[in-house]
Length: 327
Image (cartoon, rainbow, N blue to C red):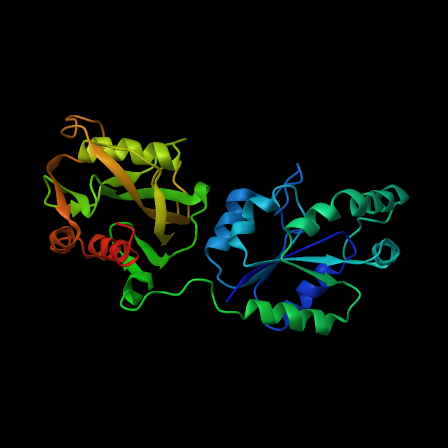
């Protein structure tokens, strides 16, 4: 299934098309309404990120300044267009939106066709003529929405991508290859490799076995969090970029986030591979950090078996990285 953005000028027919898709039973969001667009002409970014993270199949309509920030989360970006006279005639007679009633607003629309529409055209994956019949347009968009997802789950890893409940987080999680939205990433876990075919694994005083990693602190980037966690838990430093290859999308059942800066109710737990160098033992007495008792650098197969004793999920993620030939 696919996520589709329908964009274009006022009067192109976006709302009418969305209404027909909704009538056919599809999930739709018209961002002209219900507070999706902020006063500065941008989408409410956290809200939009949450919507796209929780819907594999949806049609969204709108034309805003920051929509390009979300293009990587849509399978299709459709430009709905029509000649200026058609646009102006439609906005003058429609009753569901007052924009276009004044001469100044109609002049603004004509200006946007000259300045904004070419930008939309360059980044759209498909352009449709808004003068076509609504049923024909809906048929075309519906066909796109029913296309299979872009990435196939490798055989033997179906459980890792399925939905399951995590009691310590009181959240339901499901796996994905999709690129994590930066503003929704809560945790980063590292398949750290100090040498070809070798992976770093950690153990704590409580008996937990895990890949190094943890939650992002307020204002922290994915890269800085990865570097900090590698040092605090594994006494290591990254020697190259991190490569996020898998994530769990977590849907919290709690009424509120357990910390003010934590994304809620949807958050992403990302897993990445990274080349590293070992610089020493993990530092002692770091506030809030795990009390590490074991750091081992093992061949991949041994690391999988060692993790699987206590953390089957981490073991499966490492097995996935090996299957994808990332480590």
